[in-house]
Image (spheres, rainbow, N blue to C red):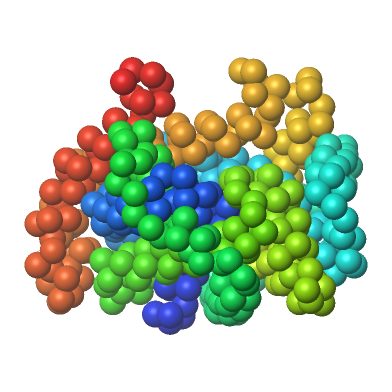
Amino acid sequence: MTDRGNFGSKIGIVLATAGSAVGLGNVWRFPFMVGQNGGAAFIIVYVGCILLLGIPGMVSEFIVGRHSQANAARAYASFSNSKAWGLVGILGVLTSTIILGFYAVVAGWCMQYLGASVLGQLKGDSTFVLHYFQRFSTDPVKPAVLGVAFILLTHFVIVRGVKDGIERVSKLLMPLLFILLLIIVGASCSLPGAGKGVEFLLKPDFSKLSSQVFLEALGQAFFSLSLGTACLCTYASYFSRHTHLLQAAGQIALVDLLIAVLSGLMIFPAAFSVGVLPDSGPSLIFITLPNVFQQAFAFMPMLGYVISIMFYALLVFAALTSTISMHEIGTAFFSEEFGMRRSHAAWILTIVCGLIAVFCSLSIGQADLQLFGKSLMDFCDFVTAQVMLPLGALLTSILVGWCASKVVVRNEFTNHETASSKSFFGFYMFCVRFIVPVCILLILMHQFGVI
Ligand code: PHE
């Protein structure tokens, strides 16, 4: 077996894991959900989901990974003393491999837009920008090549190892991302009429809250915290024995929430200042925002040019720290379970994800690549985010809450009674045994139309 490596510092642990959590989900989905679903009222619900489900879910994955110090499959099997539970780890490997496949396609689009911003190619009216996106995303070759290039970029970080690759890149990119974000927020909020955007994002409107909103907040919390993919379990296997798991989970969730809210403060004020109501997903980032930036900074085109470059650079950084974490799950699995060199294991993943990325990319322009009436890209997104991810988190909470030895769980949670967080153990167990599984079951039943 290869030498496993570990994160080298406390800050490295938080930044790398927060790097996994902070991604496209924060920038293109969260702000829109907040704006549409009652502003600060949604944020309150979301924070509730993070506290009662997200953090307990994270800590559970941390416990399994740190206790076993092994890849996801072995971690679940050894934590439970049963090979069958190892399947949950394998489910995580599968989920993250599929997510990496389609996520890399979008990350490749971000790279294209970064290049186009630098070359000043995104200038034009709204029809021009729309056509630019349609032409580019349905091209059979270029987006596929860029998706694969993004996976290769991820690959070269991964093969450098946990400390010299993952930790180093996260320590560089996360602060950079934060600085870029703050600069754009500053520029966006100082535009005339920006206040309406801030109000749309933050003014609480409790009348918009409904059961649907609760379910959406829950799903968003899970995806945004990278829960249910065994990603947190794999990263925790590189944590030190002294890491306070609850404290780390709290810090990571806080960073994730902060970046999500700041993303809203970056997008809405600029959009409202030019009278555009922003949408979510790819159309927000690749069609609406290039227009918004041009119009909002029309009084100073150079500033618009720089902001656009910064914005796509920020997206590339956010996506990269997330794809690194998805890649690591499979790389650790193949290298440890099949006794391979880390670089060989990484190639397996790169090739498999590269193929998924090529087919997902092709499925956007080519109607024949469909599954259950959805393009392959949308199908991969649906089946991972709506089914596999909640299932992984549900099974983890059942394992930690009901099947594992309570002494082992307590020792990991309290670092053998030394962590100051030990007084929270009872509440944590209550969440893991009851709140988390019940809420996830509700999401799944809702997903399949049972409720
Ligand atoms: N949390 C990441 C985001 O918000 C996505 C992700 C999901 C990363 C699952 C790793 C595992 O974009």
